[in-house]
Image (cartoon, rainbow, N blue to C red; front, side, top):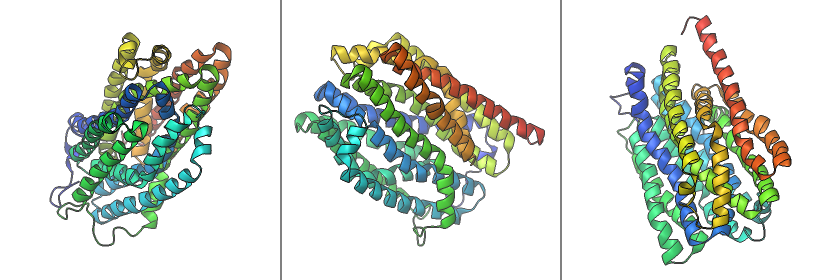
Length: 452
């Protein structure tokens, strides 16, 4: 956020590499903390409840993806709009974006909660639950769903806080949530003996505390973007543009929901409940590195959005280049770590020998294309950041629908459970090639117009 006398003009004047680190580092810390936030539950549940509880938690992945999809539909789109409005010095509309985020997330979150709770059993069975894992998945999701409105508004406000000039405060809010969750998890799981339900309660309490802090921050009248009279009235243009721009991450998470369902079905078919649990562990490990890259893309977003709004195209592509380089270094490190020390990483989640063996084998296969995934992710978020949702949507859908699903259907039928794991790097490779083709076409367009 900016003070009324200090708009973030540095986004259009400061050295791009310096700006990227200035905005990315807080986002990276916040996103890493966010991934640890997901890991904390899994670690305590795995160590304190057991391997089947880990599998039950993994079954909730599609639910979480679906909830995230509806949250990002508003949050990501609104954040992009806010960045461009700030670049245009349109502070009145930027304030309206803030109020619309709260109202839209509240409405969507409430509808999602009601519908999901009514049909929770059949939904979880559809997501891959068995008679053994359903009790764990249901106990966890019932608590999470009851607080879904809080979650949606919390993530929406935090995203807007970051993109409007306060990346460090956004980082602090996320770290606060993670720290509280890490403290409360063992209390509810071990001391109060509440099992997997205790992990969910700890998550909800942590988010409630952070949301209160965010509301206080946005109530500061000295900031350009703050709560005020008239900001909560839905604006048709803001709602429409938020949905259009947010459609890319929405579809990505929405499709991810059904992709994970399909993955769970294949894992259950070829490896049983523990194979689903292994994917739950592997997914949380790789998520750490993906979230670091997401931190870079979030740091890139206000820089790209501001300069694209100001039509400073060379700075736009310079920010893209620096982001791609840094993201590639992160994912390459992740690849090396998971290939060389898989057992050490998996041991954080479980001591069960069977679950550990399946998880280690899956981890080493899933990360094979990690170094290429980085640029593909950055390019997709780049198109989203400059308000080009069609390209961003295509890239997000191509990796999962066009490439991953066919691989997941064909390869396991040939080589069994290994084929499930190998489907990930194959689709990552194909998606990366597609992303590079699109971005090169986009760069050539601006070279022809002499803007680059």
